[in-house]
Image (cartoon, rainbow, N blue to C red; front, top):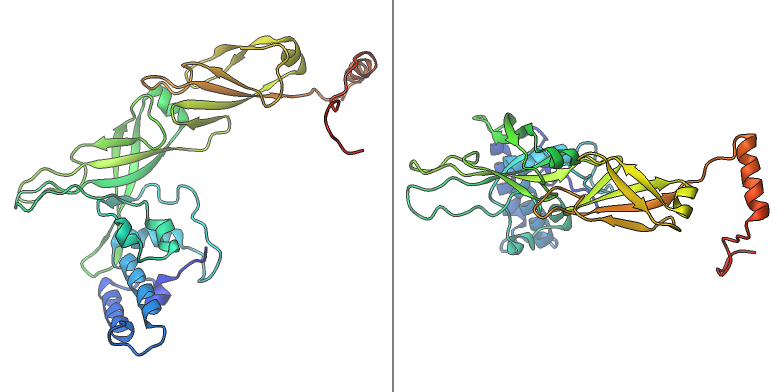
Length: 316
């Protein structure tokens, strides 16, 4: 996917004010609107202009785009990195599938999942404020302990001069025990203010987990790569496995093989009901880096009638 430079499309600088962006859009709309334009590519250019304006005229989308697009040039190969939008607070107005259909794949890839559809406060003067949305990253261990975390959010807005600014706010958030990837934590009254004395909207925090060196969460289940010694795999063993919730004893069956998966019921994320622990076994050979180790390997080679390639096709 190619990177799109929306500032170049509208012909404005990266520090352009809201009024400058609006003025540029109106000039281009008069030039390329299919109803009046004689340009042969008017319809395609008008779509590009509409898309660029939809981003740069909105403080939230513009701030996210500026963050994501640093260092990219038009036409360069582009893939949004994981978690790029974490910590941005977005208001509740997202895009419907019908609205998204008029934009490019580049736009859909970046902005298709941002925000959400706001709940309606009705046509009355007294109305509830919009819900806001933000993506946050936690450690897998937080799901086991349910700690209180200080969450810092960036809130984009245009100032009185039409310049884009980023406000920030911090919230102490109680993380529910057993929280899962993709789960929403709702903070009542932390969204947009209500109208006419109506209640404020809520802030919805979408939970994601930081990459972990040992664990991987999938729903309620916890995955772990478990190295085992050859004798533990061959003879069977009971070994201790360290988990975020504390160590447990696991029985390795006799004759276990690399790639085999063991399931331990109820030892995944402490949800209701709890998930399972899935252990992917990896048989690790000790190095033959001492005379004793080499002697043991040589003895095994002489005395064990074992051919790991028996019954399989292999290069000759």
